[in-house]
Image (cartoon, rainbow, N blue to C red; front, side, top):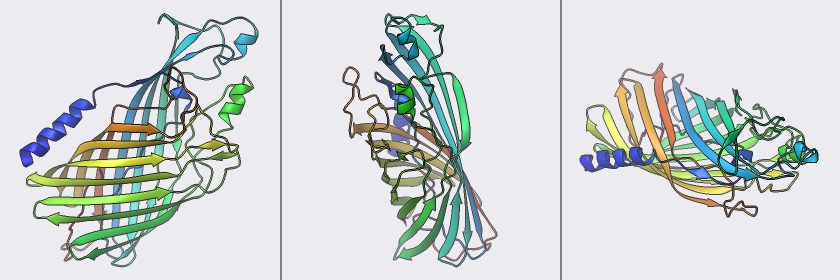
Length: 359
């Protein structure tokens, strides 16, 4: 069993090396990462837990562009068709701080810090690169960083027999930066930005985690919903986001555990002025599978995971380029995490069944 788990983990790591390329205007979408998960955790009154989750991926996208969509230069001359060859590097560091209020109730805050770096190479249809002698309104080499929307939770943790359960309810605060409607600006021939770090609205978030131990084996599952119920001041409405998953791990040597997991991610279409823009986020369902490893040093737990998309479905891909809906795809999502607690008793009498590192 332990050897099979280790071999499966290696196989998933190898699969992540494959690169995927989209053929439509995926670079016109706002790249989002799945939210890093936290573990089931009991906290005593006054006890603090602190975790740092770093999630990252890279994407390579290409799409053809023709006049008049190339931009204002088309009003001056008949600009030949071109290919936009774009790379994305996306990362999010999410510190998570929780404070025990009672033996069952705790407060939790998550503050995402995001970085998105993009590069663009302009090519003729024969693949040769060229440098435009005009400003492109769609794409540019740039690195953007800033705060996302912080989450504030109340959480309850308890046990149902041998099953440990944590329920969270909270709200995302509209702190991250937002942009003017990039599709309206693009149609007007104006430079625009598709990347947003926030949604501009208060959004309720609900999550449920459950797990238990079977000797050296642990298994668990979770479900989470993030709801967007109104437009922001710029007439943007993000699509509701739903996630669920299962994971299990086994201790292969003392303090070292390896495991496997699977996740289902569903994001509904986003809207600008109540319209789904077909080069924007048209909604998607992704199924991810991957492996994880964790190592415990007393109260400090280090973990890493990698998840590979094994299925993707786009909800409303009405506008396509060569039958490609033009949505961002990625070869894998990598997560590195560090978690610890402060101020708890030296010996915790309660069972730790079902506690898994973040997948």
